[in-house]
Length: 88
Image 1: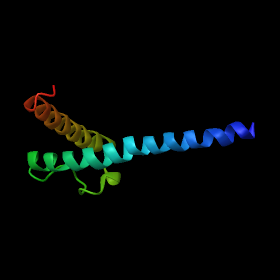
Image 2: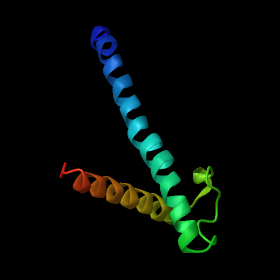
Image 3: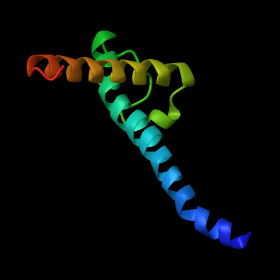
Image 4: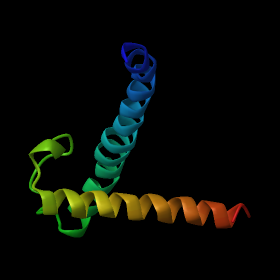
C-alpha cells in the first residue's frame, strides 16, 4: 500500500499545481487585475471597495463581479483579435 501512495504523490502534486494555476493565477491575478480598473472606470472610483492587490479582502459578490468582468473583457479581446486575424 505504501508503494501506491508513494507513486501517487507526484500525481497529486501535479494536480495541486494545476489547481493553483487555474484558480489563484488565472482568476485571482489575471481576471481581478483586468476587472478592477474596468469597474473603477464604470463606477467613477466607487467600486470595488478594496484596492487592486487586495482581492483577498473583497466580499464574495464583489469578487465574482470583478473577476467576471475581467474574464468578459479578456474573452472579448481574444475573440476580437482572433476575428481580426482570421483565426476564428
